[in-house]
Length: 96
Image (cartoon, rainbow, N blue to C red; front, side, top):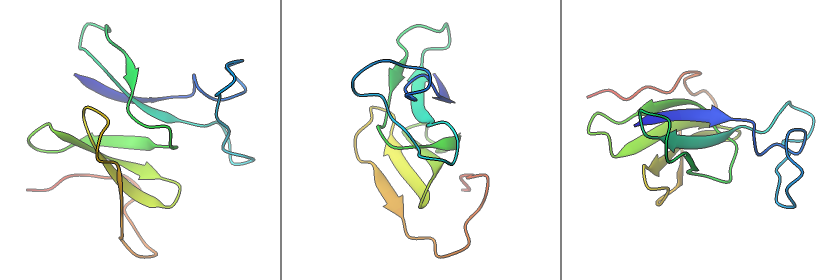
């Protein structure tokens, strides 16, 4: 599977009634996953997220969210914001 962020849900790129906006900080990026062949593309969150990294066992993703770091299961469940303080890594990375 491949994890990526996309601006397809941003109101500047979508006319859907549930399109998203980040305000004035640039386009809204949603976290998506897809199969390696490009099939089964699906959003994991309705929150802003970029700079995604897989957990070592492949069952979670960590990503940069507007208020810090967030973790979500690959099926989209269990979204949680991490309490990392005022300074957090710009590029989330799992370590063993």
